[in-house]
Length: 166
Image (tube, rainbow, N blue to C red):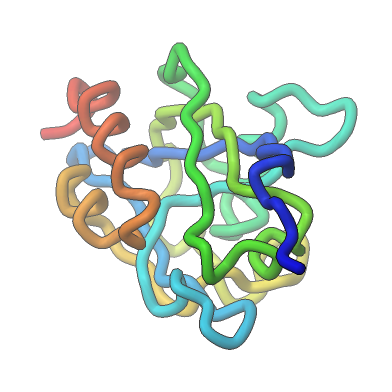
């Protein structure tokens, strides 16, 4: 008997579009979390769950530091709506610890205030590496590199935050 995954909730999360002074955004190449992970070796912007008692803004700053090793940034804008995605069928019951059908995300645009040397993806704050490489790319390029099932969210982010791109 198969489980009805449509009854699972969405995991509340945040996402960060981190812009440098040239209007490029930070993306990291994900490390595989489980065998068959569809997002392994693909690129994404920093994102992660909201802890109990934490505001989305606090979660965004914490996640930025945990995933990139740097908190040298300021929030410059917020997507006015929550964006959702569903996991692909083959990842249901596996991805997101099997507890969620996907994620609902509050996205923030941030301006990076540090230097590239501030990033430490090997031993980030929090201790668990999420990425094995990173680079600055255009916002449009980031939307092309994301795993296919998350592309609609990234296309929305291009519309929402293109004013910060160059």
